[in-house]
Every structure is written in C-alpha cells, then in structure tokens.
Amino acid sequence: KEICSSLPTYVSPSNGESARDILEEWFADGGGSTRKEVVPVAMGRRITVAKANDTCGWFDFGELCRRPLGAADYLAIAERFSTVLVDNVPQLGANTYNEARRFVLLIDALYEARTKLVLSAAVSRDS
Image (tube, rainbow, N blue to C red; front, side, top):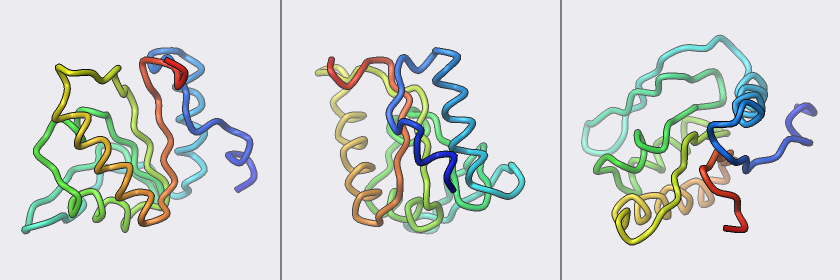
C-alpha cells in the first residue's frame, strides 16, 4: 500500500477539495467494493457505516461523536477496520464538551487497537 504512505493523516480545512481527494485516496487504498455496512457494537446495538470497503470505514464526526457511543462501541469499529477516516471534525471547545470527550475515547480505542486514523478537520493542528 505504497500510495498512502506519503499521504497526510491530518488534513484541513475539511471542506477543501484537496482534503476530499486525500480522503478518497486513503479510502481507495482499503480495497474491495464500496458499500454500506452495519457493524455490531456493544449491547446488541449496531452502527451503520455509510461508506466502507474491505479494510476502511469512512465516518462523519457527527456519526461517531454526537451520538451516545462509548469505548466498547469504538473498539468494535477498530476491530472491524484497519483504517478509520473521520471527516468534518469541528473546532472543539467548551460548548462541545460531550463531543470532545467521545472524540478522545475514539482516539484512545483506535490507538489501543493499532487502527490507523485519518482526520479531516475544520482547523489546523496548530490552532
């Protein structure tokens, strides 16, 4: 998978055309056909992944962090995909405390499972 080894894993701004192109390249590197997929998570619940392939799941920030999900849910996602793309990560602050807390849990779960994370964010890492 040489194509993606030179691509950034953090792109901003998230609404830029080049950001979309980079995420598309990461996704294409996952192999297989593009499909909608349902991933079983904690307590018999399921998370619908609107765009998945053999090794990559593409999520919008809101799908993962604006819903009441926890570490077990994120670990289930990490076990299913070797690469997770998270698009449209907003600038987080005091008014988005719950989303920020879930985002930290997501990052921890992906790190623990050694799942690659690729982000498209509204602000640069330096902000």
